[in-house]
Length: 135
Picture 1 (cartoon, rainbow, N blue to C red):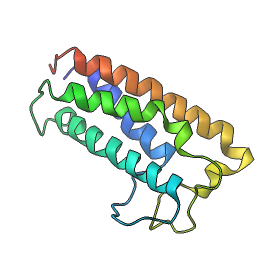
Picture 2: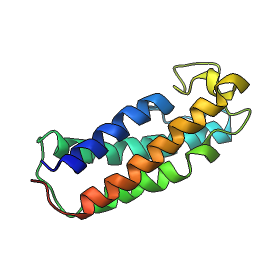
Picture 3: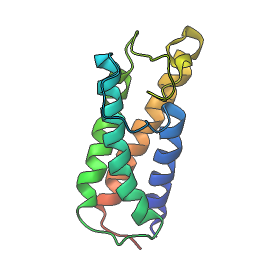
């Protein structure tokens, strides 16, 4: 498998966990519109990244449809900073896996750096997938 493709997927998987973790599936409103939007976007990113990860793991064959998956991942990543406005944290981890620390002043710079790293990795992922070279 192309080293660039594997590295991009790995960076995105690791970066995604550092930024917010994977959101729990839920079909109800949390009562916080910003949190609901963030959870929906993270689920969208996770589903599209999951399809790419299956190819990276060799569980599925490469297809051109992955280009759309990679673009969705990059699109969500490009808007990550906007998905965490003040007051959008939730008290229950079962509702959202966004850690309360990310809204605390001492962690904001590190969180922003994690977002930037994830954005860079998602751009690399788009290029890797567009190459069409699974080998």
